Image (cartoon, rainbow, N blue to C red):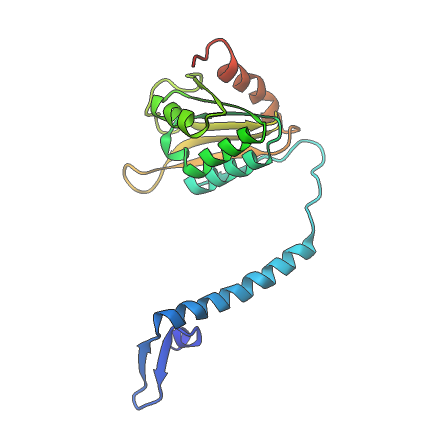
Length: 211
């Protein structure tokens, strides 16, 4: 209770025994905003002093992440940096968030050549409606069936021929609940990019794909 009082979330009456009551909700929110606003301001100033990271030498770095939100956010980030071409394949509808659709549409609007594929008709319908400037195709290169099986590839995204993300469906500790794990890189020096570039281009834009 004393810790909550220190944070401005509890009022204290100095009596015997001491009495506590919840602070006014508006006052509590303002106290939290001040507390965390100050911390974020300090963090912003510290990060500015660190400067950009050094460019990696040799082969590009490959990073790993887990979680539907984390994978979606990284896909959006890669799309926001795209300037020439985007190839994306999405097999599960929960990864095709409104933020991802907006990022694809924004890329197409600024002149990026966007080609999107999926084995699922529901995903293709949302892509056609949400990204009218994209070429939407059907592709089964990485999938035998939809819904996909656990452990199968759930999405692939390549931007400008160098930035690449590949995610897969994974089980969680909850019955029937899945998440997504992904590897990604923003460097064409990574061997994974060289391996995936021709396969992705053929799967999405080749003769096997159909609108």
